[in-house]
Image (cartoon, rainbow, N blue to C red):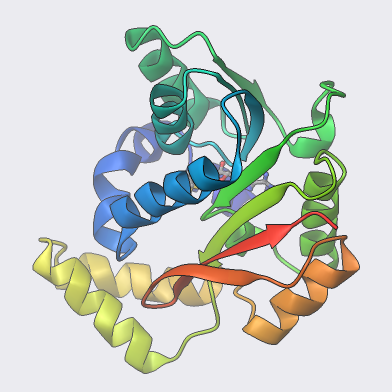
Length: 226
Ligand SMILES: C[S@@+](CC[C@H](N)C(=O)[O-])C[C@H]1O[C@@H](n2cnc3c(N)ncnc32)[C@H](O)[C@@H]1O
């Protein structure tokens, strides 16, 4: 994780994350709801799901609540984000959930997963080689045919940024704050276009991405482990 990124998901930034993210990612709640529906449509009553970049636990906890027969394993390098996720899991007495601080490659767990989710994470992974390693590490944990739900900020233009600024403004984000965010979208994110994503998926053992949701430039795709 870069120094900028570790700051972004540390301390006060981690504490404010849940309130902030819904204003900055158009369709954040819907993304999570539809991702849960895709997994529910694909998986049986008993399944193991890997949540990469679990953050404050939003998708992990929702999946656990909706699917008591599933075992959820969340991975994230930010101790501060995971502290919130663990507190929330404890408050809801969810015992089918575990969180690991670190990266997918650090997981000692050798049992294959039936599915993986990576929501709003890979766009922070800089460079094609690093993204290739990121996806290959996930592929290595999945059984053949298992879905990976992947959502990231994709290549975008000024028109998209204008729409995202208006979306944030309508939700109460001030113009100054949004100017900073607009700047960081250019410097701290590493978006792919659809062709590059398709190529990376093929190289790392996944089928062609199948789109299932889009909020302006944030696009969600279902990939299958080949
Ligand atoms: C924008 S948050 C998304 C959290 C959650 N998935 C959500 O939808 O709210 C991105 C998270 O990815 C984590 N992260 C960054 N790089 C990662 C990597 N290479 N592997 C796993 N998690 C990573 C960050 O620490 C952060 O918690």
